[in-house]
Image (cartoon, rainbow, N blue to C red; front, side):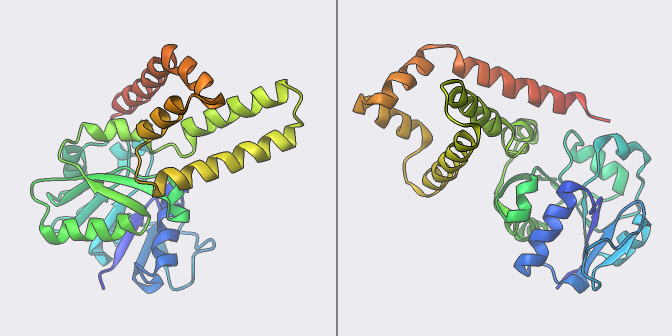
Length: 260
């Protein structure tokens, strides 16, 4: 089994991915390296090697995942020629990653802290020089975090930064709006909170496992013409879809603006 390292492995996303790899057995503790600023072991298993020196990690590992804030990228220089470089950083392009690492074997992905529960969605794009073995390794490592898909257009990753990266993000906003509505009608806050959490849990399970698409679920409920249909028709006829699209576009633009 290959040795894998995470540069930035003690941040929220890096830790979540490391936890997914260890919990699933995808990466054994003895095959995992973590680079962080302090070199502190923290609560990583003792078999995991933790270092403050990214160069030591690069020298020891076959595959390297970079998971640091984009603002720290200009200070990072690696000699990782002939290594597989993966990234889950927003805004840092495949060309940027190749320049900072010296490797042409680059795979850029998006993920989320939901990886800790193996519920992340991780789309990825491979550089032309990435081999089929590299692609298989990306599927193995990202698949351990949840679901993954290969894309051909790198520009689409900016949209996934907004769409699936900020878990629970926009879904939490909808949950908060629904809970606020309930409390405004006199529902006790703790009951409104519990009800909305259970609603989203059930909805997520149904949407994940049912054959129908979200659009088909909406159409089915509208066609049924019940109580929910009255509210859905109002949403469909109003500006809600446009506002959601504008919000996601604003987040995608922010990702582009963050490029170092």
